[in-house]
Length: 358
Image 1 (cartoon, rainbow, N blue to C red):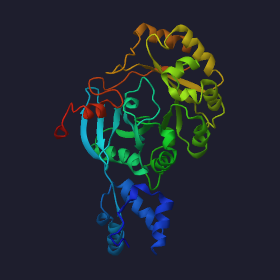
Image 2: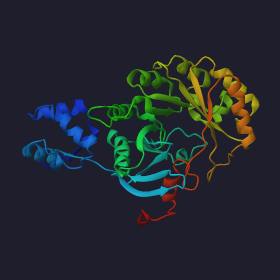
Image 3: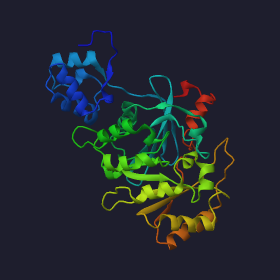
Image 4: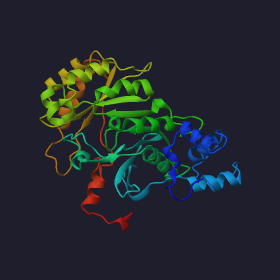
């Protein structure tokens, strides 16, 4: 029993095996872990007193040992296209962003894995604020759990998760994989299909095989250039894991049947949007089961890069299509709000809005 000398444990930070072992050590039957997690994830219960199929004595003990976390919503911005951008405060006062994106008949949620980012990509607003810390397993899961609760009962279902918000997921590997396991747990977790979870990485090559071994999520790789000189300039990670090593790791990645790797390619005017870039990209990805998301650069304050003309974007897509690639143009949603990842957090730092606006 907690004697008051130790703080309570966030129960979202424990997986099923860990909670079962913890209960066993207290002389409690481990099957209660399944009951507890069913309440937390399936019923969105926030108090142990509300877990009515547990004994009063056990509920009282759980309340002394654990708490069930929620993130603090500081501000939510609503776009005319239905996109919602949440600025969330963590227990230590730091902030992250989570974005809810409307699709034709469902929602996709883009979640963060770090406060800030250490990768230093020149086109990314999050990177400009530097790296502060990894998110815990609980903080990753809470983004999904909290947004689910925020959705009205008659709203389209939240079915898709993309792990490509603030931070580099593979740099927080243990917590991210643990969170994924709970997201896809169909009995005592959040019940998402692994086919509807996508993890995006800048290409931390040593972790790619681990991800394919440890999860069944979809892989997206932020490529953005076809030669090392350009990618070095855009993405410092390329100096450690150059294009050739990254492509070889993708070629040997343990893909699940009927899956393809998505390559994200941010089109930047005069940098990587030329006809020769498109032909090099097609040649580079030919050995891989791949599809390509072309993302016109989302211009933001503090960055000199520009978005290409629409005709340039369409020409780039045509070259890839003529080389038998599926190449989709992904236009940014939420253009009338803080659309760039990290922009809402950056505005908070500049005090462009007050916390009372939340």
